[in-house]
Image 1 (cartoon, rainbow, N blue to C red):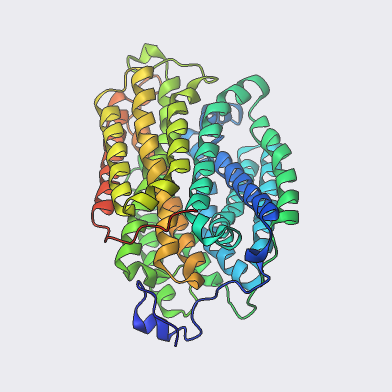
Image 2 (image 1 turned 60 degrees about the vertical axis):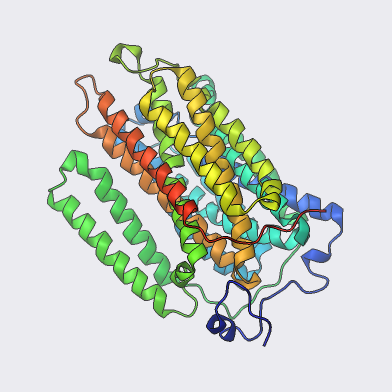
Length: 491
């Protein structure tokens, strides 16, 4: 029997007597440096584009709501639909990658992203646009595949830097979407929020198909379609309950029934997944101290980041006549997150070297403290564009560094054959957190609106308080992390 991985129990090792699946000679690791760089460029490009599509519609939600004659709650589902679909697609594509090869499934996920973007660009109403956004979310299955392929195409001593680069590009993509959404929607119309990225997506998809080396599949792997159905059911039902609470009443039969169905299906899903030898989401991985703590932190990162993307630009656009709004035009509202994007980018690019010199736990603690400090500032004072700009910059640096370190921890805490499962689980937790955070804050702001239809300032304060608590939870998750070895230095 092969040596037991330091973070794997003897029982788990016995269940896999063949040991970890390392790439065979002549596989992707054997490619020359030039194709390897091309593959890494393709991976970063795909990560950038998907992350940008997550955030690109956020500052334009008010415009979409007005032009499609829909409610604020329904408009927010343009974000939630993508996140729910992504949460379900991430583990499915991880399994399909094991079956048919990660490179094939990576290209398929990009094709789905292109198809969803095209449908969204052509959508004549909110229903078709929601379908397009959900289809884009299915393209989010690329996230776990991307980190797995990085492990394949990058030499061992450069994995930390490669992971940091991918994380940085995801942060840049999210920030780019926020910053450019307003100007594009104002000058060209919201449909161009999809047409312009599509012009880049198609070439990136073709390029990825050409340069990412093929990887072998394992036909014996099975996809847990029942688990996928249960996951999407309880998550969607939960978010419906949260979103309908303010309008229908928290004690209404619809809301109570939705919460009850979500709770029952969630319990059934957990029990079902634990009984399978190849579950969609390996809940048993969360029994390892390092993994459940890292994933708890990822969940709250998702809550804080997506909720902030969702409603801070909305606060910036609120007229000054309300007494608390900043009165920033829609074309410039996304600039409030510009320093956030810069901070996240710097943190992502620097994370690889940081985790080579310090314990990952130490880096994550300092990152979480930055996020907490930034949001405490937002909670205390948010009546100035400059103040929000600086406070969100500190928050962005913190969460950017935190999320960039996570993949480096995961790939060094599990066997090679578990990398896809663990990175996929982490992405699912973060995506679920994002969906819950966006919908929760939307629900808070919709509670007891003013006579002119704008949220009360107190509801923004409550929202900032909730997200400050989420940042504190991120810090606590890092605080209880066990110590782990430093990542090997790059040569």
